[in-house]
Image 1 (cartoon, one colour):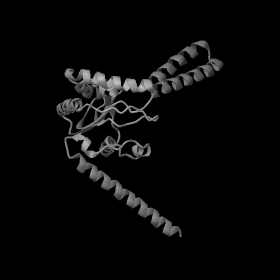
Image 2: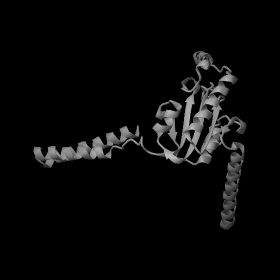
Image 3: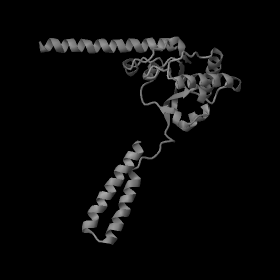
Image 4: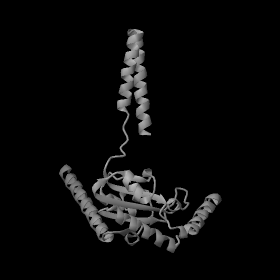
Length: 238
């Protein structure tokens, strides 16, 4: 969308310049100026950053589209997908539960893959209680966050999961923000009223609960400091 917007803007600028040129310059000079403007347009279009090395990634994928699920679980996945299709057709909430054996197999596959990536830190969770705005249950999906000491390209990490690079968000925020989002404990998630998952539902290669307690204490301290500053300012104004 951004690329298209920039391209259209550049084309508008090109047409304006051509219109001005046509009024005061000869035909040959207009052709020359047209070529120059075309080059400007090409140079202004953002280049793809497939080779950009990123340290943090967030991978999000619905269970039916995970390409790491063992073949023996295919029938279970198909059954799960049919349940969601039925709920969609009836346009009403239908309680659907995650198959424990399927979850166990997917968790194992993710742990093996994440270990192979060489990520310094990783954590993931199954979101099976999210709801749409209309109250319908969202399709079960995984959120997987992993962080490298040295950056890697999105194409490289996508190969480990046998999935498309578009499914991997290049994480531009802090690690704490990513870990908080896994259980919907960010400010935006709370504001939207998203379901809050328990720390124990997250699987990580570190003590996730301990990390979240540190984050929570840090947030509390920050809020107290802000509140204290507001009180001081109010006192000064008085």
